Length: 396
Length: 218
Image (cartoon, rainbow over all chains, first blue to last red; front, side):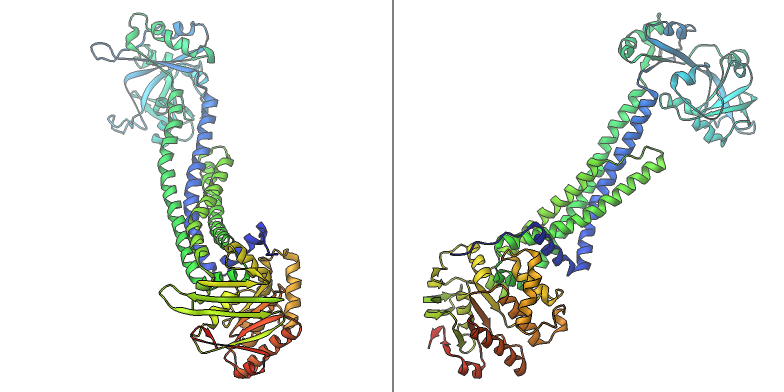
């Protein structure tokens, strides 16, 4: 009976492949490095996107998507329109509305750290009168101090948005700043307001105080309205006419959470670019492996000849070199995945985002590495298998 | 029974070099045959044809009565794994593996499970007198010892025939004599051995000698 070729066990195949790498360690490390860099950059991009997406989503979930804002549009003549005095009251009567509040910018008022600073240097900080329920409606939080209350709203007290506080270099309440020509006391500093980012750069004063002392006309600049989730679309249609029945065309209604949703989408598009760069790095790494394997085949013709003379089939030789390439690539891939994950977790930690371990990113990294190994190993492996035993043995 | 039969076997290499011309030769079970001839006379080519490392351009090659010419490459590989042991002039040991692992590598392509390979390899090394060099690596061994590891590797699969292509070509006289002693011992134990050699002493001593010149049997 003519014997049939034996099947190599998976374990034996791996052992043979790894033995080939162990014999040339330095070269193995260098060629795995290429793949490691490619995989690391891809995993980092996807990982950072995953954790930052989770961060944004968490923010969205916290502030909700059921807030609509009503702002003044432009009149036909191009001058900036303002909202009627009673618009907040009318909006709050729409069925489904659970809260309505407003701010109104005080025309011509500036906020400065001291009276010695040139009034022209506003740092982009505006002065606005705020309703007491502003923070509750926007689900904002105070970083330090307190928000305005019925008492402080009648006195020269000011609450700073996070950007305004940074500009003034103020990190705790108690200081005096120069607002609209008089000294006022900072009583609180806000956290960022995702639904009203313009207020981050505002100095908020009490509505009655602004009307009484700062010459504020009482017309809201922006009305914020929060409703039940199912009523948002319906209310959006009715909002312009309700807030300004005489000139509904001069009113702009918007949904501030749309900006956050759009940011999520934009981030995904931006990731595509970096992912592409990572893919290029991975491709270069794969070519590096193919290169090293081709050289390896040239150098190891005698070993190939010996194995053929010992009874290895062409298929077994081919498999040996593919396994070697995959092992090489996988070493790089696993290293790259770990580095990439570490980078994204570090980033998440630094940004204060939730630490999410994106499982599909890990799977993707490892799968990509295996794929690169197979593809880059195939050509050298075929060359190795194509050698006849006598050709291979005749090499000096 | 005839182990090897060459029937009008010829080998012409691409480029027109005719290395072997219509050689007909039969080697029986248990024979020890020395193949002699000057360089380029076709000795290695004949050995490669008999050992299924290469196919004849014309003619027949039979092992144990089976036609080798019509077999697929896969089947030929299996024939080499099961029936044939090779010993080469350059030893071809894997540098970073121990003697045991070098010998055990042979059993990989026979499908012997990993746990049984080491034991079989040790036994084969003891047969060639290297029981005290089991964990040495090739660079820690003398030339003669390396060639004995290579012989153990050929033997461990219990082949039907052992082919040795100038096994003492890289060795000094004393080591070479040691290798011949082993080949002789294997022959006495019943193994069929075909050895290419320039060593005239051995060629005179063996029971059968085949001379080649310009690819023809003399």
